[in-house]
Structure formats: C-alpha cells, structure tokens
Image 1: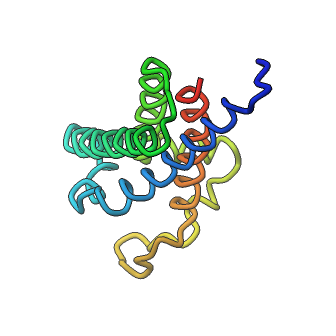
Image 2: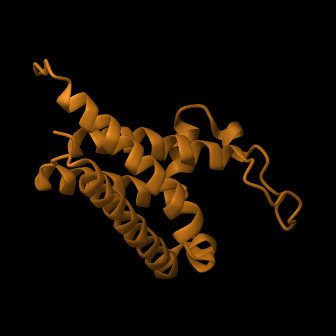
Image 3: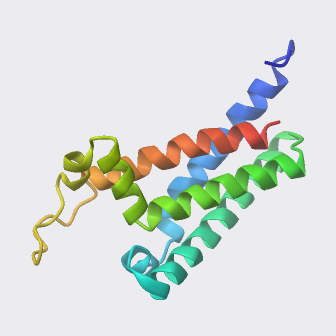
Length: 155
C-alpha cells in the first residue's frame, strides 16, 4: 500500500508483533491472577470486573513490552498508533475472555463442536487442561488481533 524501500515499516511491524506476542503469553499466563482466570467469563458484574482487571494488566504488560523494544532498539513508534493498537488489542481481548461472545462466534462459523472439544463434562472436573478447543480458539483469536494491533502500532 505504501512505499517502504528501506523496509522500516516491516521491521517495526516485526518488532512490535514479537513484543505483543511475548507480552500476550506473559500477561495471559503469568500476570493474570487466579481470581481473574476463574471469574472473567462469569455472567454479571463480577465477571465483567474480573475481565476488565485482567485486560488492564494485560494491556499494561503489552505497553511495558513495547517500551522495552523502543528502549532496546531505538525504534520510533507513533504514540497515537500505539494507543490505537493497544485499544484494539484490549477490546478484542475483553470480547474473547468474556467467553460467551467467542462461543457464539465459533457456533456461527460452524465450530461449536470444536469449541467444546476437551471440556469437562457438566458437573465434573475430569479434564483440567489447556488442551481444549475453547482454549485453542481463544488463543488463535488473540493472535489474529495482535497481528492487527501490531499493524496499527507500527504505522
């Protein structure tokens, strides 16, 4: 779309995407509290607040990762582009982590059965693992939106 003979935008995108991807892994698996993980998909205000708290720490982790990339590489990022990119990441992360929207999207796209793959049976805790269809769809959703967020950040 835009001429970039030196590859500056491509390099910025690559650095930003890696930073956001690493921040995603750290924020989703290390920074997120057990309470947030347990409650963010629950209905009502308790679930909304837990999810908002998770998305807040998630977004702060992403911002810190971007600051490290800027400090470590001298990369210049437009603050407005970063703000838009982080907002895209935050909003889409919240949507997925409320669980019901992602479940509905999966059903609409014909992936309802995959979404439930590996889930414990109702009333049982017989598959406590990360190896579920819901987790795989959640993570792929996040990665797709991190790609979009990185495009905005690297403008």
